[in-house]
Length: 283
Image (cartoon, rainbow, N blue to C red; front, side, top):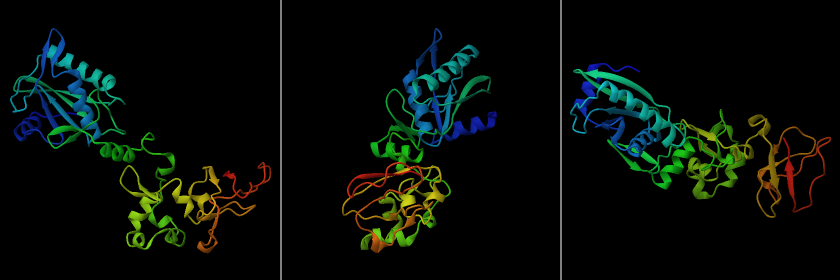
């Protein structure tokens, strides 16, 4: 990461935006007096929760170049590394670059886009335009879903790689939709948790919902184990046939009282349960 004088000068002329934040720095006795460490953590976390960005330290909000001494820039470099590692959870791995502009030293702190939601001491922040703001609960949920955090997203709702809308068997999921739902199948399948978005925003089948309407579930998730429960009166899309290696989808007309029924295999243990008991289907 290297920045030329002209690149830095141009950005100062343009001002702050979604990717650049200017910071006036005050260090006294080797201690950072302004901004406070927590304020730095908020700025770094906000960039990490968005698409990343850069802190230009030694420049005022108005674009006046303050500059730093060599001792100050070395100390500040150490401080921002400590802040990004210790004050933000999970830690953000920043990159720093020392730049000289008109004989004045500036520190550029490059913040990458995070792989999860990052919380700073003041809470979760998000970079929006030229400023940061606290994230709403909905924004936190969506960010965590996109970045695959299990604490906001159950395993069953996570995306299965290399799947999509066409992976699902229309003859199996179509009977599940209402008349209104059939008018917008994409939205309806998402509400049923059969489809979801992966980290890149691509539509994928879910861990739990995908196999339920997939013609060959074992091929879709060969290393997964599924547990089914008999639910009186509940609809079922799957019928695991005895002594078979794959689930065979049940015809819509066959859907009656069970979710998944026990499938017998040599040495698999007890036989199928009674009409209302739970049944584990090991794959």
